[in-house]
Image (cartoon, rainbow, N blue to C red; front, side, top):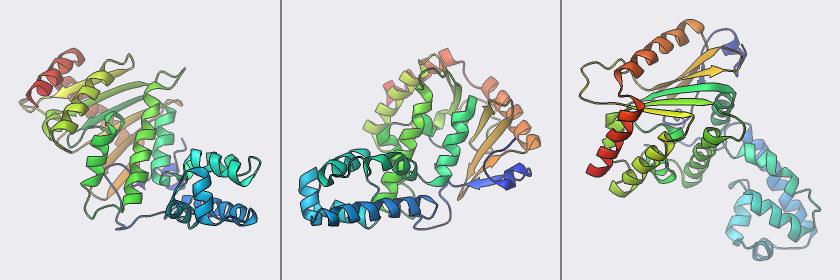
Length: 298
């Protein structure tokens, strides 16, 4: 099985910095291959603007953006959104050449490590996740996710936080892809439902969102109550992904490190552990009632 790097092909787990694990860099920025793409797009926009004889402020006025944003895009400090590229293409008479870069920019918008994880998720026919610290990223509301990312220390620069937030929201598309019915099952420790990340209002909306997600036909959501005498997930949160080729890989996160576990011996341990955790948790039906109870108390 080939998953990501050559290290994985040789059975060694590759390290990815995603979600709660954010790497050792204090200012991660565009340190991966996306940086070159963003700079190339920025250079093209600047060349087209200069060829049209427009100043940055004039281009901004023509497409409905401020001069500061246009400048940030041309310096590669901001990643342009699709509508920015469409409007710039029209205003500069580029004949579709600027708009054609939307696909490249869309991929560059997210850190490479996140894109690697998203590719694994896209290949999965079944995804299982146990979480004992926060609500799983695939189930987070935007405001809850913003609060989670905002609690990181050292703090993310504003642009990096927005970039990671957009990546997390985009990954949630796999829950309802047309024509694809990947099976999802999530086990959330009760602590994640009661930890008021972002405040009471944010948490109430997050609980309502969990109830809505749990009612999707391809999603099972279970709660592992704190009152249970047994919890086989005390070692921390993790994921299991069963891929189309029949193989199973794990995904584990700890402080500063997030890794894909491709070694069958290790993924088998996680598989066994996850089965026990699901058995220890409430049934999906009882879990819905439990979340409704917590919502009423929040």
